[in-house]
Image (cartoon, rainbow, N blue to C red; front, side, top):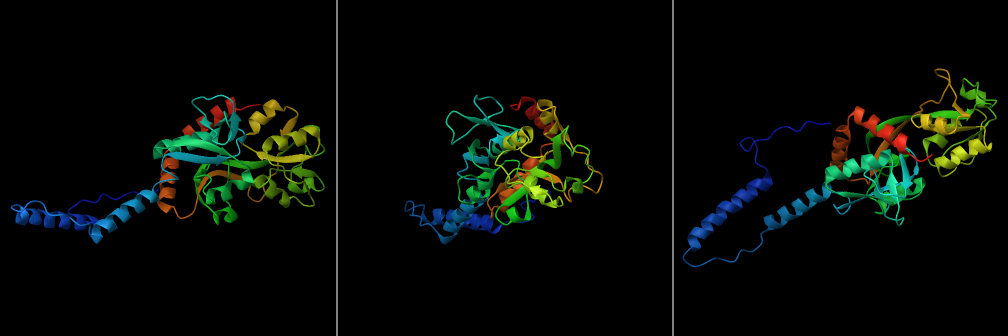
Length: 310
C-alpha cells in the first residue's frame, strides 16, 4: 500500500486550483468595475467546462456501478465462501435475481465491508461461476466476490485485488478407499478424480499422471455427492473448508502427500475482481482489504464455517 505524501498550499498549487484562483481574482476585479452598472452576465468559460469534465472523470474513477448499489457476482452455492439463505440476517445481503432469497458466507462479509467503505448498498447477483467474468465485463455486475482466484488467463479480462484469504487445494478420498494410503500424485494413476468446473480444483487434476480426469461439475455440493455416491475415487477440495466437510462426512479423509510429491502450486487465494480500466478503484479496494486484519479474516471465516448449511 502506498503512503500518500502531505501536500501544502505553499508547496504546490494544481493547475485546476490555479485556474480557480485566477478566475476568482478576475471576478473580483469585474465586480469593482461594474458595481455602478449592476451585475454582468457570466458566460461559461472553457476552463469551467474543463473543470466539470475533470470532476466527473475523478468521480467515475472512484465509483463502482451507479455509486449506490454494489452488484456482487457469486454462485451462492459454494459454502463457506458463499451460499443462498432463506432468511435475512445481519450477515446476509439480498440476492437481486432470486426473489425472497439472501446470500451469506465469507465472500459476502468481504463484499459488505467493501460496500460500507464505498458508501454503497450491496446486493448479490447469483450466476454460474464460469459466467462471472463475462458478466463483469458486460455490466451485469460491478464486482466479483466468489471464492475466485486470479490466474493469468482471468487477468487478461479483469483486474484482481490482493487476496482476502489464502486457501489451498487438497485431495479427499473415502477412508476405505484403495487410495487412502497414497503419498504422491503418481499413486492416483488410473484413478477417477473430480473437481469443480472452471476452477483450480479442476485444472490441477491434469498434473496427476495417467489420471481419469472426470468431466467437472458446476458446484461443490455436486463434487461431494460424487465421492459419497462412489461416482469417483477422489475429489479436489478446499483445505480451509475441510474441517466442516469431515464433520458432516466422517467417512471422508484428506490424503497426506509427501513434500514435493503434490501439486506444483496448490495455493488457492480468494481475490475480488472488477472490470479493467479502473486503476484508482483497484487501489481503493486493496486499501480496504489491507485494512482487514488477519485476526478479523480468520474470525469471519470461522463464523461462516459455524453457520454454513450442512
